[in-house]
Image 1 (tube, rainbow, N blue to C red):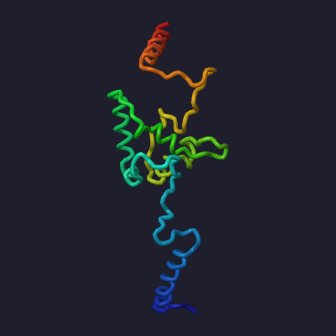
Image 2: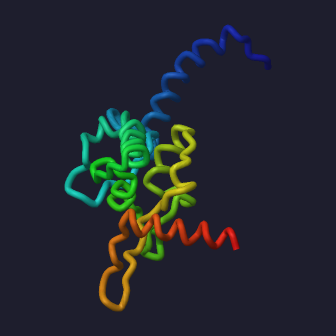
Image 3: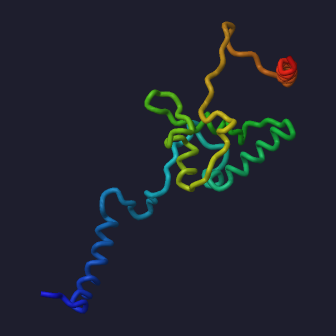
Length: 162
């Protein structure tokens, strides 16, 4: 017995809203006001971020680039928008208790960058997790100065000539 299209139309009109309601109320779906499909990055370890959360979501790259320019071009180092500070505060621990690297999808930065399909090149040069504090037998490592860096560079350049 063949069913005509005209006979199926009222059934389809009733079934579609019921199906939509069932999908909306199914377990695992976002409830009203909860954007369950959005990424949920881990909270920082400090009491509050260096700027408002909404502002950071929109402007963190501009702040990081401004910090980079001030540091690299002008030699001005501040902590407010330093990448190192972000990494130290927002480190996510892995099963081994150590902070995960950018290779892990759980890495704080990757949480949103993967969702937005935005490539990060920060970690081609920078550490993607907090670096262990260097220690010597006398306690902490000595502070490096610009003079030490210049001496190390000169020594390296001399070794290339040999």
